[in-house]
Picture 1 (cartoon, rainbow, N blue to C red):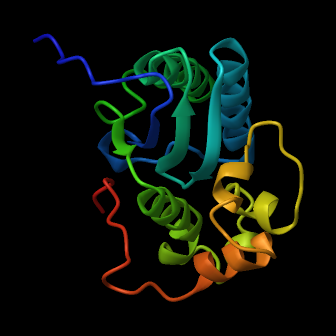
Picture 2 (picture 1 turned 180 degrees about the horizontal axis):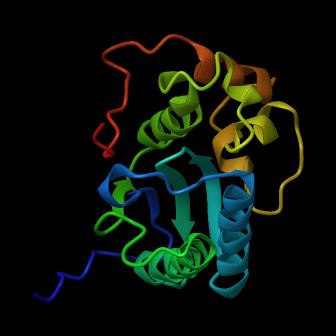
Amino acid sequence: MVRTPRNWSPGSTYHVTARGNRKQDLFHDDEDRKKYLTYLQETKDKYPFTIHAYCLMSNHIHLLIETHDVPLEKIIRTLHTRYAVYFNKKYDYVGHVFQGRYGSNKIDTPSYFIKVSRYIHHNPIEAKLTPHPEKYPWSSYPFYIHSIKNPLLSKERTLNYFQTPQISRYKEYVEKEAQSEESYKSPIKK
């Protein structure tokens, strides 16, 4: 069966999610996570795009990505194919690494963009992996809060939605308790 092409236009921003096949782990160790981020950077170098936020959980990933001239589908296919080849070779596995097609929700308003950014950075707390999101090393959040440069990440758009001092206002926003009318529901099903 032929897959329906996804709608895409240059300059669009998406919340991309992908889960391990059969909800299994995508990352068994820190080397796997580093390899995924390396492939993400190499894909970005080949097909320029902007990453506003990311979080690598054990069995799924979140990316807040803004495309430029290359369709999102080509970017994610390149990234995930490379990672799947690495993963299967390293662990002597065969078959699919990712469960089905990646998910992508188009971001169409500033408030939606900020809610998704918060959701991505709050994910390790929701999963009870850490009580403080800045302590989770596989998220872009520490780079925001500690003003650390990361060639993979662009923080300007996110921080420009907040008044001065931008970093502390963003930190306050991410770390506050979620309110039901403000919370964002992930496309990743538990």
